[in-house]
Image (cartoon, rainbow, N blue to C red; front, side, top):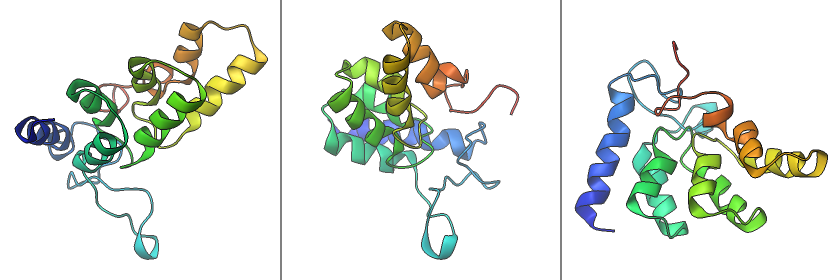
Length: 147
């Protein structure tokens, strides 16, 4: 990935929180935080952290990286989910990005596996059930409408 494009993507992602665009992982000052840190306090992170980790661990395109990491609730949640989905569900890159976007953990993969075992849902229906962005109707900044 070209460095200039990577920086531009990072600026787009971090600006969502700094503009107060409803990022659920942002505090009142528009600073994004991870969910655990030293002495119980959140550790600050930005969308750039998720992008850096995803770039290192995946072979995703710039657009896919941005989609996976925009407004990520944690620096590793969407990436861990993506890697687990690729390994256990054998989804395409685009399907795994949709499944894992806005996820703080690998829970969407567990949901998909449970739905596969317990129902006759199609892949599209399992995506609608398990993807945080689809199931919860989340906005591009991972926030809910009206919040």
